[in-house]
Amino acid sequence: MSTIVTNTITGLTTATSVTLPTTTKVGATAIVSASAGSATIIAEGGTVVTNIQQGLSKAWVNHPGTATAGDSFNMTSITDNGTGDYTYTIANNFRANTVYCAASMCRSVGSGAFLHSSKQGDAVNKNAGTMRIYTGNSAGKQQIVVM
Amino acid sequence: MSTIKVDTIQTRSGNTAAVTGAGFITTDQIKGTTTATSVTLPTTTKIGATAIVSASAGSATIIAEGGTTTTNIQQGLGKQWVRLSGAGMAVVDSFNTTSSTDSAQGKAAIAIANDMANTSYACIFGGEDKQDGGGVFVTNINQAVAQATTGYGMVTKKQTASAMSIEDVNQNMACLVCGDLA
Image (cartoon, rainbow over all chains, first blue to last red; front, side, top):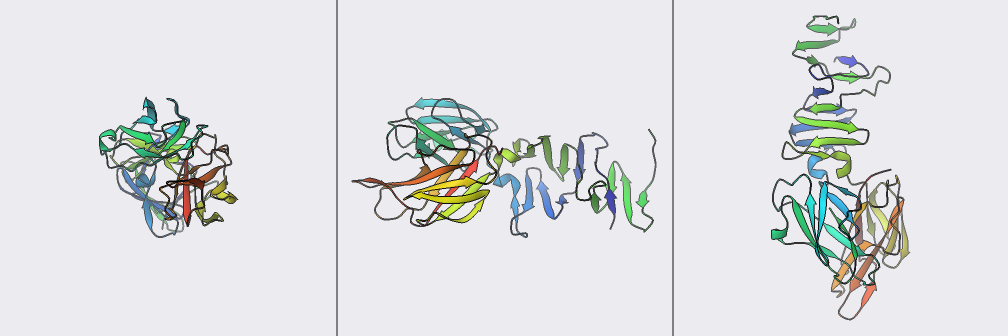
């Protein structure tokens, strides 16, 4: 077995780019590239692999109940459609129109109401670039989290 | 710049790394010189067809499922999750969680091990229905507990036709946090 000992590897054609084999181990952890857009990594048990891209959340937002997001990822804007009704616009769209998995929830922000819940809009209001969320309590301001 | 033209590189003990042309080096292992277990690769490193691009420390992207758009690895990872069980809110399984405190009936305080960078992180919850006749049963963040970089509060509520109450879950409740680590 041969070993190259060095501190830094630099690309030949482009100094900042280099290609490693489809199965590359970082220490004992193998990262395997099945194709562009599909890579696996050994999971916690040490044998089964899990898909990196499929396991990542693609968009999330903590929405304090105004038209401005708190913290977010891959979201460009929020549209206030009316009381308890918001549309979230995604920066980099999903591939398929309606088959991605989205979850949402909300809490009261001083509305005095007891139960607060949220749900996705129907298929008409969920597409590759936007998703619509309705809150369960229309009486008060609510803080919404979408993933 | 000097150029050494060679087909193979061989150590005195006989181990060989092949230089196969067109920018390829064939070897089984790469080790660090200063520290054997540490080596630095370029900011764009492809593993087969999958490019992992390090924009900066704490921010790396990977090509997404469609094959062209990239998605941020750190931003997409759940930073903390926990599954609690029973009225005592005992931790069944967790990640980046220090503890769960049974604050009161239907309430738990979660302590995060490695803190979040701000208090605007996203939490999402789920809980098992008690199946005791309640019409609506939700688990969400406890409004009475300020969301902190070190943790947050959870509460489970139930509504029946005639009453609303805070209830312990029948068996399990769970939470996932996305956001920026400190």
